[in-house]
Length: 475
Image 1 (cartoon, rainbow, N blue to C red):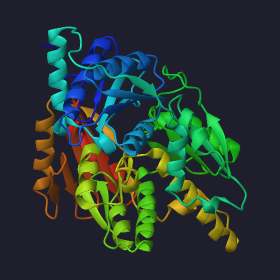
Image 2: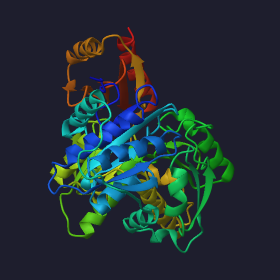
Image 3: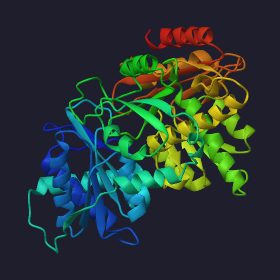
Image 4: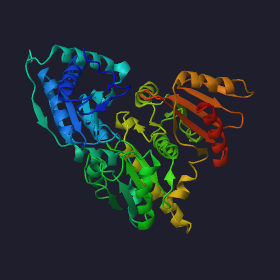
């Protein structure tokens, strides 16, 4: 029986096209998903399918649709879409969904992100392992004709409704009446080039586009803004244009990164803090109290501080969207944020949307501009973000190690014996030091890597702690 464990990850499906993921596999996965959701109550009659701009996406999506329709499901084909647009379709239509994308991975890859009706995620522990095993059985059995009624495929345009829905979730009135904001947007030849023009249409914003041409070969740079090398073009353009800010989206445009007017990167933790306070203020205006906000354990400690200061209840969770969304459902949280620039919204079916976070950032800058103008000061994003960016951080540093568990155990042995040190094992190993600094060391799920994140009071303290920990990790 085929082994699909190499491509079925913790949260999605991802592999090299032709080698690990082909049309036969996509068809089997479509049939397997249809069989899984047939057990849901109520049982769905259709599945939504969207795709990114990769050359392999149309054929793979069509094969998946054939597998689903062969099991009797209808397919709603929304065509080119960002991942959060697929979540919008799943939520607004109350149908399960499949998004064909490999996000920020190179052109040779493709994959599938799956969800149940209402954009409820499907991960290893919530159905993805079942889909993997059923698809493997179908592949082993070989091609077979459908035994029951065959569903049909219909197309539906969701882009306009998606844009309207997002704009309805953010008060953008602060952008009106003053000079337009200049925003450089780097779509990285990904799906942001498809969605940004419609979402931003009619706003008092001048968009300077970078790499809006949809091209799954990524001819300009990888569509992974988490790597600082992929922000260089955006940073240069913001300074050259005298722009108010810059935005960068990853390949499937579900993550959004920002740079300020100086071209300096804005920490996703700072954006998490900003959006959290805005959502808490909106909840308070509606009479809600003690509202939860989710943050993963790698976000800055400024985030729980800000949440508490604004009357919210910070809830810490493991890294990964399935953990965030599950905890949001359990706590009724209004918002959740991750260090990787995933932002989750209760009013967006608890799903993540980088575009919605971007609209919050624009609205906040518009409000900041009005306050600054009243006091005769210049409205700058860098000034706005100082209240949310309280500590220095290393960003994620990867180390290749032969034995991940042994290396983490060595770190635990070294630091666990020190006075005043606290250890936490919620996700990997987090070490809290007496001076308020901390670091987290986590094993990659897919590679022989350990991922290190460090936070301290200033850059010098971060550098010293990074050197100390890496000296042990890399031996």
